[in-house]
Amino acid sequence: MDDRMNNRYFPTQRASGFTLIEIVVVIIVLGILAVIALPKFMNIKQDAQISTVEATGGAFAAGIKLANVKWASKGHSGPVDNLQVYDNGTSGQLDINLWGWPAQSYPPFEASPRLNNVNDCMSVWRTVLLDAPTVSTSAEVAESAYRATYISPDQCRYFFNELPALSIYYDSRDGTVITDSDPEL
Image (cartoon, rainbow, N blue to C red; front, side, top):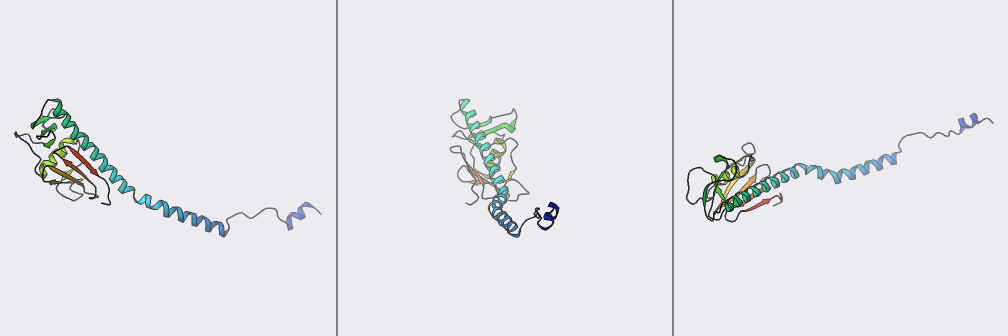
């Protein structure tokens, strides 16, 4: 018998394609990957917001420390009005309280400046952070990136308007800056 005849009755080529079982296995594997990976992708925006607040809080803390170092390097030991922290104009001046920390930023003379209202909180924010994210007393995202609040005595909290559970706390009595970046609180 001829080889051509054998091939006709007993084909050696197998049909290509996927079996039903292979397709089901692939669908199950893709489903498992989706269940595991999807929550990670869903939190990307929140992770970006947390990183934004942490970076802003770090820059704010560095600016607060810079002002204190500038105050100390000039030999001051009490309140100072209109200390030139950076630049040459009034935009780079801070009023330093009796503990040596930024309390406000206003050109008029004040013998013993204190951080004692929300406007002081906003002025410190705008002066310490060069090209600062917007701040106001409004919780509206369209108004500003952060909402400033005053905490008596001599403290501020800046809430991130897109996710208000994130905030930056400042205590002008000891220079403490705490970034609260846990959205679950």
